[in-house]
View 1: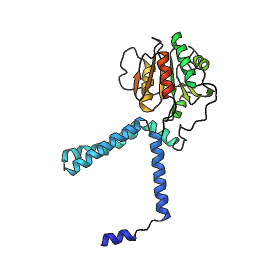
View 2: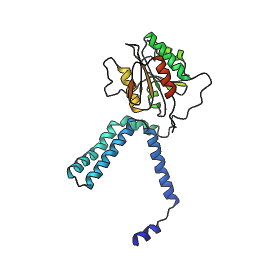
View 3: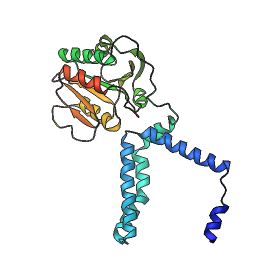
View 4: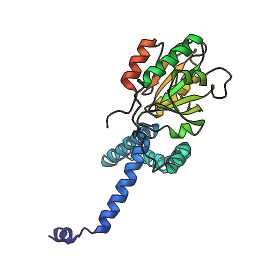
Length: 257
């Protein structure tokens, strides 16, 4: 009865509502920021460790709880060091609007056709290229590593950017909606195996971005002139122009919430 009466005496005030609302808003912005990135996968791994620690404590498994206790003690510091760049940019852009808010496209034909035409042109000429198409996860941090642009996507412009010895040909082009928002951009390199020795830095960079975001990344190999696409952490090799066009028609743009 004492506990029941204590619960009944609790009163919900406007301060409690404000407290809950601010905490919920902060967690929402953090989850929105890390959605689709390697940080979200890391959060899942931490959740598994916490569940394992609770299970071991329940069964009184002393050795497992001691080892996990050491991991938790020093793991926080290790995570802060590993994710220092991500934490810095996340704090800097914590209140940035999500990338799904895009202006409507002009009635000038699908942007996918322009991308596919440019890739086919570059492949026929044996010119290397890497094109990242933003979807739900913002690529603003990677745009900052190159030259910021604001130009509508066209096959001619994409082919010009990747012309050998041009100032921006060595980096990646980033596309948001129907606009090229960055060129000469630096992408993160994948630390995993890319699958074949003939695949170089462009493929590793494309796979690295696809591992950290939900972007679609197109690569034209300078050595073989073959077209590959990285998405969802996987690399698809030797795509024909028709396959690329179909893939872009089905996959470009934000997914449904």
